[in-house]
Image (spheres, rainbow, N blue to C red):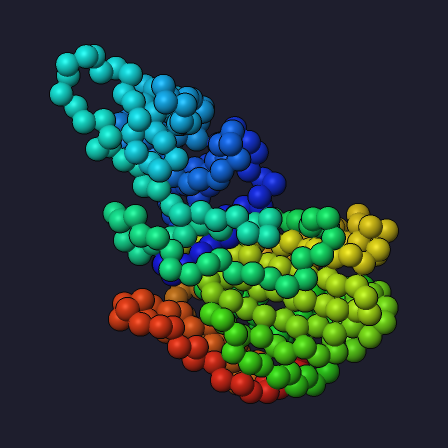
Length: 346
């Protein structure tokens, strides 16, 4: 998907005066934070001899502006991607330095997250026409948990796996969550939401033991938004938990999963080491299943999706198609999801 915001990093990941190389949709991207605190993103390839700009350093031009110096021949580029200097040129050589450009990616910081805009036309410098997503429930003094893993999966398969409601008893059976034998009939109400949908606020399922640790009578809302954001916002008496999962396509066959949790509940302080271990194991179980699934996907089989357990996967594909159609036609996005109640056993 293009002309949309992807999660790139946490704000705290981008240190002042530091450069970092990332892969997003098969392209090397340099993320940096200038000494003034501004974040920026450039294609991580110098147009001169293809050295990664992220291996360079910050420099300062005569007018005081900051630039990035390539480690190979010292070519310097501003945060806007425009070449500021080519040191090997001598006076009188006819070369328009500022005509040399590196692709610049629009980038925004919001709620402690860094988002990058991937435009459909890489040659243009098109401004984003909508803001990055906002998420309710970011309480506390910052994330209580951050876990990153990379799956050998196309973004589509990672998203579908993330939203799949029926795999829990088979993939995630452990004492602190639920047993393999614990399967209940579920009926959940869904509504459309900006660029996605939500499972409207409800009491968690009785066979999900971890919710009991929060005390009170927890209520949860679970949502999805294009291109790959899934969140669960839990309210338990006076306390809140927000578990946000961000999917970033590194290549056509590899996706990074970033799990971030905010909460003002004391359990996330008291049991922090155990919660981190459990969350990482939870994600690893999904990753192990993706590896198994790839054995079958290698033969490009047709996939059989059923109602109602796979309806969210169907919605995802419909949302993607409508996004592409609306961008192509230059019209407003029309959410194809209608309010409904889905039923399944898990």
